[in-house]
Length: 128
Image (cartoon, rainbow, N blue to C red):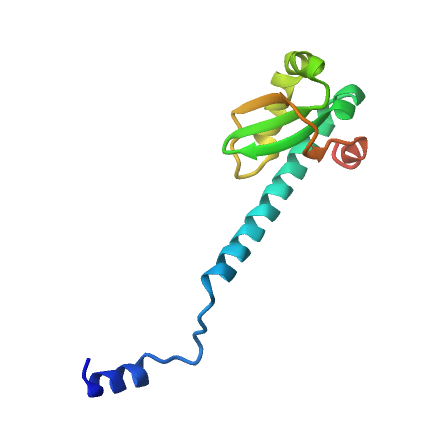
């Protein structure tokens, strides 16, 4: 590059209103934003589940996550996974299909685990 082209580039391509942000900072911001959205989606799913489930379900189950169009319900007792699936799969699917705007849910998976958003009775208040 000639000195004249370099000078022109420096004068014309420098914009004071444009600040470069390191890639790491952008990735961190994006990850925080996605994590916040995922947590909000889990809370919405927990509220929708709390509206239709009983105390037994709420004491043993949590919304473990949302993967694409699938909601993962974690059950804290491996012996109850099949029972919870049999009793609550269809009602939960019906409740969650409309309970998560912008997230079309077409599948619910019940698995053994203890992590996720609590489904508590207080979530029912004010939503019925």
